[in-house]
Length: 483
Image (cartoon, rainbow, N blue to C red; front, side):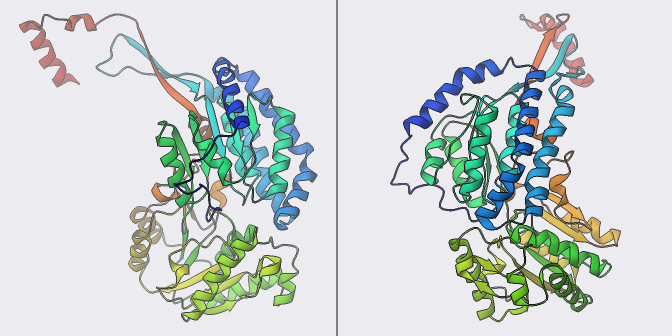
């Protein structure tokens, strides 16, 4: 996720904790302690109630998506509602297995001890969600937190007010306020929340703001999960299915008008197929959104940029690139008043253009030719580790080179963005693109403390109580060789 509105006040302006926020936080203290003893059945019942509320408000979410940034109804259904329902169903079906203590076999140094891992709630959790997928990225982590037995304060983005207000109403219908509550507001509210000693913080947003969240959490030694972003590259080699690659990459890029943390940021294409790839991309844009600029601007299938500030930022990237010599291969139209930027393909982009170093997070797609795969690998490794890497190839040796010689939060081979919806995979970044995981069992573990428990069956340690005799030293020598 990128370019969240100024998240924290300046260092000179220390945040003041609103009394209402403090009261809600304090009220969750005893509730969080009580939730440690909540049963799996009780947690499942809450998730079922949340799922039913989401389905009951389905039409309201479609209206909120339209109000906040003209999000097409099909995209609201596919990218907001469906992932939440899938997350809920996964927890309902599997929570009993996830929450069951895990027996651990003794090691050679722990004979006579019975051991297991017991999952306990972290306690009071803060979820700070972004504006680009306000439902999915709020309620998905919330389901994991509830499954693990936590109390939660959810802070949605002020940049999508219709969705934030709807989330507030929905949560109030499902949960007691001292268990789960929504706190709305701007950056000052976020800063005030981060002053509180939560037991865990789950933040989704940009790497720059993730650093501030992590610094704030460090004051209380609060654990954090950071779902961030970065410039996720796509590599299309000469063996790729050019038509399928073009259409799938553009689908992943221009869904939500490019405002997706795992969207392809830029594409490296083998020069031997670059002309054909660009032609397929141009055709895919015409087929999906309209054959000319007017048709695309009036397309019901394109969301808008979330606000004027982000529209101006994207226009600045486009203007800078073209001023430095980049060529517009498709699109390029901008209407700032309507927060509209056409799906745009760019070629011949010089290395010093801002779009080469800044996360785009919008409907601009640089296409970069290459002759040698090792040069692409070197460029990827020269940048911070991305949230995603996409590989389009039928050559196994190239696929393995990219997997083994680069690092990314997740990777798709001959597909795009679908790693997010695979509920049995960990979803998360690495270093600059995040830390920790979400979804399914991994989300449950994120919001759980894995407590190591040992119970004595027969006591062998007494053999090593002082005094340390010569015989004991011989036993120790024998054990060192044994272990």
